[in-house]
Image 1 (cartoon, rainbow, N blue to C red):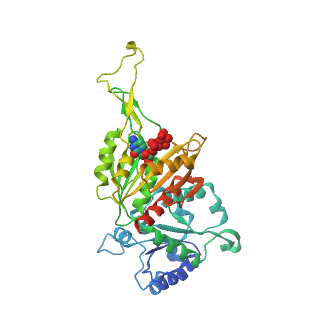
Image 2 (tube, helix red, strand yellow):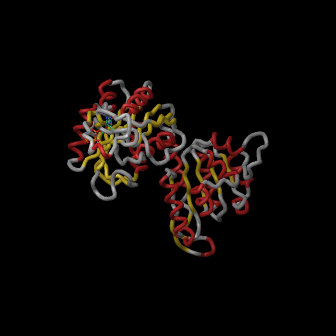
Image 3 (cartoon, rainbow, N blue to C red):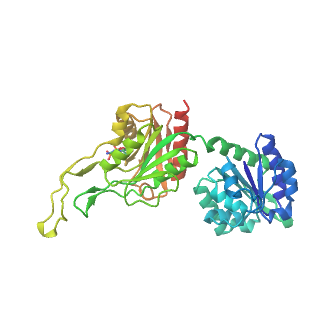
Length: 390
Ligand code: CTP
Protein backbone atom coordinates (compact mmCIF):
# COMPACT_ATOMS: atom_id res chain seq x y z
CA UNK A 1 0.00 0.00 0.00
CA UNK A 2 1.01 3.61 -0.51
CA UNK A 3 1.37 6.09 2.34
CA UNK A 4 1.69 9.70 1.19
CA UNK A 5 3.04 12.10 3.78
CA UNK A 6 2.62 15.82 3.14
CA UNK A 7 4.07 18.82 4.92
CA UNK A 8 2.54 19.42 8.31
CA UNK A 9 3.70 19.04 11.91
CA UNK A 10 1.44 15.98 12.14
CA UNK A 11 3.87 14.19 9.78
CA UNK A 12 5.41 12.73 12.95
CA UNK A 13 2.13 10.85 13.57
CA UNK A 14 2.54 9.21 10.17
CA UNK A 15 5.49 7.36 11.75
CA UNK A 16 3.09 5.70 14.19
CA UNK A 17 0.70 5.01 11.34
CA UNK A 18 3.50 3.32 9.38
CA UNK A 19 4.13 1.01 12.33
CA UNK A 20 0.44 0.23 12.73
CA UNK A 21 0.03 -0.51 9.01
CA UNK A 22 3.12 -2.73 8.95
CA UNK A 23 1.92 -4.46 12.11
CA UNK A 24 -1.41 -5.16 10.36
CA UNK A 25 0.50 -6.96 7.61
CA UNK A 26 0.70 -4.20 4.97
CA UNK A 27 3.81 -3.56 2.90
CA UNK A 28 3.99 0.18 3.27
CA UNK A 29 5.55 2.25 0.48
CA UNK A 30 6.08 5.78 1.77
CA UNK A 31 6.11 8.75 -0.59
CA UNK A 32 6.85 12.14 0.95
CA UNK A 33 6.54 15.63 -0.38
CA UNK A 34 9.54 17.92 -0.06
CA UNK A 35 7.74 19.87 2.67
CA UNK A 36 7.02 16.68 4.65
CA UNK A 37 10.73 15.81 4.57
CA UNK A 38 11.41 19.09 6.43
CA UNK A 39 9.31 17.83 9.35
CA UNK A 40 10.43 14.17 9.52
CA UNK A 41 13.43 12.70 7.73
CA UNK A 42 12.82 10.07 5.04
CA UNK A 43 15.26 7.76 6.83
CA UNK A 44 12.81 7.45 9.76
CA UNK A 45 10.09 6.18 7.41
CA UNK A 46 12.59 3.95 5.58
CA UNK A 47 13.58 2.34 8.88
CA UNK A 48 9.94 1.92 9.98
CA UNK A 49 8.69 0.54 6.64
CA UNK A 50 11.77 -1.41 5.66
CA UNK A 51 11.61 0.08 2.16
CA UNK A 52 13.19 3.01 0.37
CA UNK A 53 11.24 6.25 0.70
CA UNK A 54 10.68 8.32 -2.42
CA UNK A 55 10.19 12.07 -2.66
CA UNK A 56 11.04 12.96 -6.26
CA UNK A 57 9.71 11.77 -9.64
CA UNK A 58 13.23 10.82 -10.69
CA UNK A 59 14.21 8.92 -7.50
CA UNK A 60 14.28 5.58 -9.34
CA UNK A 61 15.84 6.10 -12.78
CA UNK A 62 15.18 2.45 -13.69
CA UNK A 63 11.38 2.88 -13.79
CA UNK A 64 8.67 5.45 -14.48
CA UNK A 65 8.35 5.81 -10.75
CA UNK A 66 4.87 7.35 -10.37
CA UNK A 67 3.37 4.78 -12.75
CA UNK A 68 5.06 1.87 -10.98
CA UNK A 69 4.00 3.08 -7.52
CA UNK A 70 0.42 3.69 -8.72
CA UNK A 71 0.16 0.17 -10.16
CA UNK A 72 1.64 -1.48 -7.06
CA UNK A 73 -0.72 0.25 -4.62
CA UNK A 74 -3.86 -1.66 -3.62
CA UNK A 75 -4.91 1.22 -1.42
CA UNK A 76 -3.44 4.68 -0.86
CA UNK A 77 -3.62 6.93 2.18
CA UNK A 78 -2.42 10.50 2.54
CA UNK A 79 -1.73 11.34 6.20
CA UNK A 80 -1.39 14.08 7.05
CA UNK A 81 -3.11 15.66 4.04
CA UNK A 82 -2.55 19.42 3.87
CA UNK A 83 -5.08 21.86 2.41
CA UNK A 84 -2.66 22.18 -0.50
CA UNK A 85 -2.65 18.46 -1.39
CA UNK A 86 -6.46 18.28 -1.04
CA UNK A 87 -6.73 21.17 -3.51
CA UNK A 88 -4.33 19.50 -5.94
CA UNK A 89 -6.18 16.18 -5.72
CA UNK A 90 -9.51 17.92 -6.28
CA UNK A 91 -8.39 19.57 -9.51
CA UNK A 92 -5.91 16.94 -10.71
CA UNK A 93 -2.63 18.83 -10.35
CA UNK A 94 0.35 16.48 -10.61
CA UNK A 95 3.42 18.59 -9.88
CA UNK A 96 5.38 16.21 -7.66
CA UNK A 97 5.84 12.48 -7.14
CA UNK A 98 2.95 12.03 -4.69
CA UNK A 99 0.31 13.90 -6.71
CA UNK A 100 1.49 12.32 -9.98
CA UNK A 101 1.24 8.86 -8.41
CA UNK A 102 -2.24 9.56 -7.03
CA UNK A 103 -3.45 10.93 -10.36
CA UNK A 104 -2.30 7.73 -12.08
CA UNK A 105 -3.58 5.38 -9.34
CA UNK A 106 -6.87 3.44 -9.65
CA UNK A 107 -6.92 2.18 -6.08
CA UNK A 108 -9.17 3.39 -3.23
CA UNK A 109 -7.88 6.56 -1.58
CA UNK A 110 -8.11 7.62 2.06
CA UNK A 111 -7.10 11.13 3.12
CA UNK A 112 -6.57 12.31 6.68
CA UNK A 113 -6.57 16.11 6.62
CA UNK A 114 -4.57 18.12 9.13
CA UNK A 115 -4.32 21.90 9.09
CA UNK A 116 -5.24 25.01 11.02
CA UNK A 117 -8.94 25.63 11.61
CA UNK A 118 -9.03 28.66 9.31
CA UNK A 119 -7.73 26.64 6.37
CA UNK A 120 -10.09 23.73 7.08
CA UNK A 121 -13.10 26.02 7.25
CA UNK A 122 -12.27 27.98 4.09
CA UNK A 123 -15.00 27.59 1.45
CA UNK A 124 -12.26 26.54 -0.99
CA UNK A 125 -11.16 23.65 1.25
CA UNK A 126 -14.76 22.68 1.98
CA UNK A 127 -15.47 22.55 -1.76
CA UNK A 128 -12.33 20.50 -2.43
CA UNK A 129 -13.26 17.99 0.29
CA UNK A 130 -16.82 17.77 -1.09
CA UNK A 131 -15.39 17.06 -4.56
CA UNK A 132 -13.16 14.31 -3.21
CA UNK A 133 -16.01 12.75 -1.20
CA UNK A 134 -18.24 12.79 -4.26
CA UNK A 135 -15.52 10.89 -6.16
CA UNK A 136 -15.43 8.20 -3.50
CA UNK A 137 -12.35 9.32 -1.58
CA UNK A 138 -12.66 8.42 2.10
CA UNK A 139 -11.94 11.34 4.43
CA UNK A 140 -10.92 10.59 8.04
CA UNK A 141 -11.09 13.45 10.52
CA UNK A 142 -9.85 16.01 11.19
CA UNK A 143 -10.34 15.92 14.95
CA UNK A 144 -10.68 18.82 17.36
CA UNK A 145 -7.89 19.53 19.83
CA UNK A 146 -4.53 21.20 20.21
CA UNK A 147 -2.96 22.38 16.95
CA UNK A 148 0.50 23.71 16.09
CA UNK A 149 1.44 27.19 17.30
CA UNK A 150 -0.33 26.62 20.63
CA UNK A 151 -3.78 26.91 19.01
CA UNK A 152 -6.89 24.81 19.63
CA UNK A 153 -9.67 23.84 17.25
CA UNK A 154 -10.74 21.53 14.46
CA UNK A 155 -7.94 20.49 12.13
CA UNK A 156 -5.98 17.95 14.13
CA UNK A 157 -4.93 14.76 12.34
CA UNK A 158 -7.18 11.81 13.22
CA UNK A 159 -5.55 9.22 15.47
CA UNK A 160 -3.46 6.59 13.62
CA UNK A 161 -5.82 3.80 14.83
CA UNK A 162 -8.76 5.58 13.22
CA UNK A 163 -6.83 6.04 9.97
CA UNK A 164 -5.83 2.35 10.02
CA UNK A 165 -9.51 1.36 10.37
CA UNK A 166 -10.45 3.50 7.35
CA UNK A 167 -7.60 2.01 5.31
CA UNK A 168 -8.66 -1.52 6.22
CA UNK A 169 -12.25 -0.74 5.28
CA UNK A 170 -11.14 0.78 1.96
CA UNK A 171 -8.93 -2.22 1.21
CA UNK A 172 -11.73 -4.70 2.00
CA UNK A 173 -14.32 -2.95 -0.17
CA UNK A 174 -11.82 -1.57 -2.59
CA UNK A 175 -11.49 -4.44 -5.03
CA UNK A 176 -14.48 -6.62 -4.24
CA UNK A 177 -15.60 -6.64 -7.89
CA UNK A 178 -12.17 -7.58 -9.28
CA UNK A 179 -12.49 -10.31 -11.90
CA UNK A 180 -16.23 -9.60 -12.39
CA UNK A 181 -17.82 -8.45 -15.62
CA UNK A 182 -20.62 -5.92 -15.39
CA UNK A 183 -22.83 -4.36 -18.02
CA UNK A 184 -24.27 -0.99 -17.03
CA UNK A 185 -26.69 1.09 -19.09
CA UNK A 186 -27.21 4.82 -18.73
CA UNK A 187 -29.14 7.69 -20.23
CA UNK A 188 -32.29 7.84 -22.31
CA UNK A 189 -33.11 6.27 -25.64
CA UNK A 190 -34.41 8.40 -28.49
CA UNK A 191 -37.04 6.87 -30.72
CA UNK A 192 -37.13 8.67 -34.07
CA UNK A 193 -40.24 10.29 -35.53
CA UNK A 194 -38.45 11.61 -38.60
CA UNK A 195 -34.78 12.40 -39.38
CA UNK A 196 -34.73 15.31 -36.89
CA UNK A 197 -37.38 14.59 -34.24
CA UNK A 198 -37.66 11.89 -31.63
CA UNK A 199 -39.63 10.64 -28.63
CA UNK A 200 -37.33 10.63 -25.58
CA UNK A 201 -36.94 11.62 -21.96
CA UNK A 202 -34.81 13.84 -19.77
CA UNK A 203 -32.42 11.22 -18.32
CA UNK A 204 -28.86 12.63 -18.06
CA UNK A 205 -27.10 9.28 -17.54
CA UNK A 206 -25.65 10.39 -14.18
CA UNK A 207 -27.05 7.46 -12.19
CA UNK A 208 -25.72 4.80 -14.55
CA UNK A 209 -22.40 6.62 -14.77
CA UNK A 210 -22.09 6.60 -10.97
CA UNK A 211 -22.71 2.82 -10.91
CA UNK A 212 -20.25 2.20 -13.77
CA UNK A 213 -17.57 4.28 -12.10
CA UNK A 214 -18.07 2.67 -8.70
CA UNK A 215 -17.90 -0.83 -10.20
CA UNK A 216 -14.83 0.13 -12.24
CA UNK A 217 -13.11 1.61 -9.17
CA UNK A 218 -13.83 -1.65 -7.34
CA UNK A 219 -12.00 -3.63 -9.99
CA UNK A 220 -14.81 -4.78 -12.31
CA UNK A 221 -14.52 -5.02 -16.06
CA UNK A 222 -17.37 -2.69 -17.05
CA UNK A 223 -19.16 -2.23 -20.37
CA UNK A 224 -21.19 0.98 -20.31
CA UNK A 225 -24.00 1.15 -22.85
CA UNK A 226 -24.96 4.80 -23.17
CA UNK A 227 -27.93 6.50 -24.75
CA UNK A 228 -27.73 9.89 -26.50
CA UNK A 229 -27.49 13.39 -25.07
CA UNK A 230 -25.98 12.42 -21.74
CA UNK A 231 -23.42 14.22 -19.61
CA UNK A 232 -19.76 13.15 -20.00
CA UNK A 233 -19.37 9.43 -19.15
CA UNK A 234 -16.65 8.39 -16.68
CA UNK A 235 -13.24 7.39 -17.96
CA UNK A 236 -12.42 3.71 -17.70
CA UNK A 237 -15.42 1.55 -18.66
CA UNK A 238 -15.70 0.29 -22.24
CA UNK A 239 -18.18 2.63 -23.91
CA UNK A 240 -20.87 1.52 -26.38
CA UNK A 241 -23.01 4.38 -27.69
CA UNK A 242 -26.56 3.71 -28.87
CA UNK A 243 -29.60 5.79 -29.76
CA UNK A 244 -32.76 3.66 -29.76
CA UNK A 245 -34.16 1.00 -27.43
CA UNK A 246 -33.64 -1.59 -30.18
CA UNK A 247 -29.95 -0.62 -30.46
CA UNK A 248 -29.61 -0.70 -26.69
CA UNK A 249 -31.15 -4.17 -26.62
CA UNK A 250 -28.65 -5.46 -29.19
CA UNK A 251 -25.67 -3.89 -27.36
CA UNK A 252 -26.80 -5.14 -23.94
CA UNK A 253 -27.54 -8.69 -25.08
CA UNK A 254 -24.13 -8.90 -26.79
CA UNK A 255 -22.27 -7.53 -23.75
CA UNK A 256 -24.33 -9.65 -21.31
CA UNK A 257 -22.87 -12.88 -22.78
CA UNK A 258 -20.64 -14.15 -19.97
CA UNK A 259 -21.27 -11.11 -17.76
CA UNK A 260 -21.77 -11.54 -14.02
CA UNK A 261 -24.28 -8.72 -13.62
CA UNK A 262 -26.38 -6.34 -15.70
CA UNK A 263 -27.46 -3.02 -14.22
CA UNK A 264 -30.17 -1.32 -16.29
CA UNK A 265 -30.00 2.27 -15.10
CA UNK A 266 -31.01 3.58 -18.53
CA UNK A 267 -34.40 5.24 -18.95
CA UNK A 268 -35.32 3.14 -21.95
CA UNK A 269 -38.30 4.57 -23.86
CA UNK A 270 -41.25 2.22 -23.37
CA UNK A 271 -42.80 3.17 -26.73
CA UNK A 272 -41.57 4.20 -30.14
CA UNK A 273 -43.34 5.64 -33.16
CA UNK A 274 -44.61 2.77 -35.27
CA UNK A 275 -43.43 4.42 -38.50
CA UNK A 276 -40.39 6.65 -38.96
CA UNK A 277 -40.87 9.26 -41.69
CA UNK A 278 -38.03 9.11 -44.20
CA UNK A 279 -38.11 12.88 -44.71
CA UNK A 280 -38.68 15.71 -42.25
CA UNK A 281 -42.40 16.14 -41.51
CA UNK A 282 -43.61 19.53 -42.74
CA UNK A 283 -45.73 21.85 -40.64
CA UNK A 284 -48.00 22.56 -43.59
CA UNK A 285 -49.09 18.90 -43.56
CA UNK A 286 -50.78 19.57 -40.19
CA UNK A 287 -50.22 17.80 -36.83
CA UNK A 288 -48.99 14.25 -37.47
CA UNK A 289 -50.83 11.31 -35.95
CA UNK A 290 -48.17 9.41 -33.99
CA UNK A 291 -49.06 5.80 -33.37
CA UNK A 292 -46.76 4.36 -30.71
CA UNK A 293 -45.81 0.71 -30.29
CA UNK A 294 -43.91 -0.93 -27.40
CA UNK A 295 -40.12 -1.20 -27.49
CA UNK A 296 -38.51 -4.49 -26.48
CA UNK A 297 -38.26 -4.76 -22.68
CA UNK A 298 -34.57 -5.57 -22.31
CA UNK A 299 -34.68 -6.37 -18.61
CA UNK A 300 -37.65 -8.70 -18.93
CA UNK A 301 -35.86 -10.52 -21.71
CA UNK A 302 -32.75 -10.94 -19.54
CA UNK A 303 -34.89 -11.93 -16.54
CA UNK A 304 -36.71 -14.57 -18.55
CA UNK A 305 -33.38 -16.09 -19.65
CA UNK A 306 -32.57 -17.06 -16.01
CA UNK A 307 -28.87 -17.24 -16.74
CA UNK A 308 -27.58 -16.86 -13.18
CA UNK A 309 -26.50 -13.28 -13.86
CA UNK A 310 -27.34 -10.73 -11.20
CA UNK A 311 -30.00 -8.45 -12.67
CA UNK A 312 -30.60 -4.95 -11.41
CA UNK A 313 -33.39 -2.66 -12.55
CA UNK A 314 -34.42 0.91 -11.85
CA UNK A 315 -37.96 2.16 -11.62
CA UNK A 316 -39.48 5.57 -11.28
CA UNK A 317 -42.68 5.92 -9.30
CA UNK A 318 -44.69 8.86 -8.05
CA UNK A 319 -46.71 6.97 -5.42
CA UNK A 320 -46.77 3.55 -3.73
CA UNK A 321 -43.05 3.21 -4.39
CA UNK A 322 -42.51 -0.05 -2.58
CA UNK A 323 -45.69 -1.75 -3.85
CA UNK A 324 -45.11 -0.69 -7.44
CA UNK A 325 -41.40 -1.52 -7.20
CA UNK A 326 -41.99 -4.99 -5.75
CA UNK A 327 -44.44 -5.77 -8.57
CA UNK A 328 -41.81 -4.75 -11.18
CA UNK A 329 -39.04 -6.71 -9.45
CA UNK A 330 -41.17 -9.86 -9.51
CA UNK A 331 -42.55 -9.34 -13.01
CA UNK A 332 -39.10 -8.82 -14.54
CA UNK A 333 -37.33 -11.58 -12.57
CA UNK A 334 -34.81 -9.20 -10.96
CA UNK A 335 -32.44 -9.61 -8.02
CA UNK A 336 -32.46 -5.94 -7.10
CA UNK A 337 -34.57 -2.94 -8.01
CA UNK A 338 -33.92 0.69 -7.17
CA UNK A 339 -37.23 2.53 -6.89
CA UNK A 340 -36.84 6.24 -7.34
CA UNK A 341 -39.43 8.71 -6.26
CA UNK A 342 -40.04 11.15 -9.10
CA UNK A 343 -42.26 14.16 -9.37
CA UNK A 344 -40.98 15.80 -6.17
CA UNK A 345 -38.83 18.93 -6.58
CA UNK A 346 -35.08 18.20 -6.34
CA UNK A 347 -35.23 14.45 -7.02
CA UNK A 348 -35.08 12.24 -10.07
CA UNK A 349 -33.77 13.16 -13.52
CA UNK A 350 -30.99 15.71 -13.55
CA UNK A 351 -30.74 16.08 -9.76
CA UNK A 352 -27.73 15.19 -7.65
CA UNK A 353 -29.71 13.16 -5.13
CA UNK A 354 -32.24 10.35 -5.33
CA UNK A 355 -35.09 9.66 -2.97
CA UNK A 356 -34.97 5.93 -3.38
CA UNK A 357 -35.28 2.47 -1.87
CA UNK A 358 -33.38 -0.67 -2.88
CA UNK A 359 -35.69 -3.68 -3.07
CA UNK A 360 -34.26 -7.17 -3.16
CA UNK A 361 -35.71 -10.50 -4.29
CA UNK A 362 -34.75 -11.95 -0.92
CA UNK A 363 -36.60 -9.22 0.95
CA UNK A 364 -33.50 -7.50 2.41
CA UNK A 365 -34.62 -4.04 1.40
CA UNK A 366 -32.93 -0.70 2.04
CA UNK A 367 -35.79 1.60 3.01
CA UNK A 368 -36.73 4.81 1.25
CA UNK A 369 -34.25 7.62 1.98
CA UNK A 370 -32.25 10.40 0.39
CA UNK A 371 -28.99 9.26 -1.28
CA UNK A 372 -26.36 10.98 -3.36
CA UNK A 373 -25.97 9.11 -6.64
CA UNK A 374 -22.54 7.98 -5.47
CA UNK A 375 -23.91 6.58 -2.19
CA UNK A 376 -26.61 4.75 -4.08
CA UNK A 377 -24.05 3.38 -6.55
CA UNK A 378 -21.83 2.21 -3.67
CA UNK A 379 -24.75 0.51 -1.88
CA UNK A 380 -25.74 -1.24 -5.12
CA UNK A 381 -22.18 -2.45 -5.72
CA UNK A 382 -22.08 -3.75 -2.12
CA UNK A 383 -25.25 -5.73 -2.86
CA UNK A 384 -23.98 -7.00 -6.21
CA UNK A 385 -20.63 -8.06 -4.70
CA UNK A 386 -22.47 -9.90 -1.91
CA UNK A 387 -24.79 -11.68 -4.38
CA UNK A 388 -21.83 -12.72 -6.55
CA UNK A 389 -19.91 -14.03 -3.54
CA UNK A 390 -22.72 -16.46 -2.61
N1 CTP B 1 -36.33 -1.22 -19.21
C1 CTP B 1 -35.87 -2.06 -20.19
N2 CTP B 1 -36.43 -2.05 -21.42
C2 CTP B 1 -37.47 -1.25 -21.69
C3 CTP B 1 -37.98 -0.41 -20.69
C4 CTP B 1 -37.37 -0.41 -19.44
O1 CTP B 1 -34.92 -2.81 -19.94
N3 CTP B 1 -38.00 -1.26 -22.90
C5 CTP B 1 -35.69 -1.25 -17.88
C6 CTP B 1 -35.14 0.08 -17.43
O2 CTP B 1 -33.78 0.24 -17.79
C7 CTP B 1 -35.31 0.02 -15.94
C8 CTP B 1 -36.58 -0.77 -15.79
O3 CTP B 1 -36.69 -1.57 -16.95
O4 CTP B 1 -34.28 -0.68 -15.29
C9 CTP B 1 -37.76 0.14 -15.71
O5 CTP B 1 -38.90 -0.61 -15.85
P1 CTP B 1 -40.24 0.05 -16.31
O6 CTP B 1 -41.30 -0.99 -16.15
O7 CTP B 1 -40.10 0.75 -17.62
O8 CTP B 1 -40.35 1.09 -15.19
P2 CTP B 1 -40.81 2.52 -15.30
O9 CTP B 1 -40.04 3.26 -16.34
O10 CTP B 1 -40.79 3.01 -13.92
O11 CTP B 1 -42.26 2.12 -15.89
P3 CTP B 1 -43.69 2.69 -15.76
O12 CTP B 1 -43.64 3.86 -16.64
O13 CTP B 1 -44.50 1.57 -16.29
O14 CTP B 1 -43.94 2.96 -14.32
